[in-house]
Amino acid sequence: MRVAILGNSGSGKSTLATRLAREHALARLDLDTIAFEPDRIAVPRAPEVALAELERFCAAHERWVVEGCYRDLIARALTLGAALLFLDPGAQQCLENCRARPFEPHKYSSRQEQDARLEFLLGWVQDYYSRDGDMSHAAHRELFEQFAGPKLRLTEQRDALPQLPGGAG
Image (cartoon, rainbow, N blue to C red; front, side, top):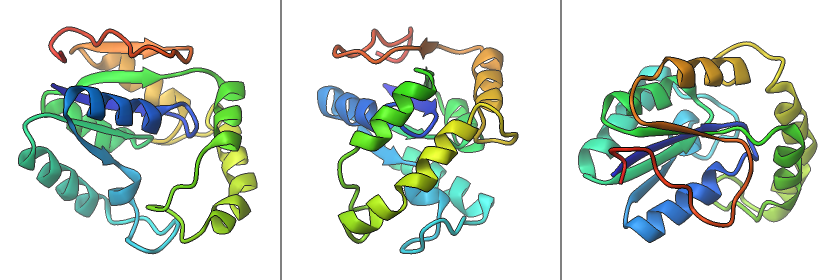
């Protein structure tokens, strides 16, 4: 099983990836950890470095799930045999999830630091639907529509795991 999860911040990507990893014994990669320089908040890595990290992770594990908002990284994972899950629950749900998110120690040195960045994150979530570029709703929707492999678009949160598209199970 190989799964790539794409969506806005707060769409539930990390939660779903964690559940899939646990319930299906998958290696899990949060793409935030390779898209940015280690120990430097919001300092992007060179795209070729991030792609190389993704390829190393996928080569090291037969069964995996990757998740993030990075169209190019997700597109590369799809070429490595992943099914695509596009989480698209809408802005309101994403905002609620961001406000309720637990402390993310792999991204922030303290809960206070994470909370101090919440307003920026909420603005980022709202801009998803109007901005351009690889981390926009338009780019995510386009990748989903163009991908010919197994895929599923989820527009609401669920307690149960989704039935994975053919080939992912």
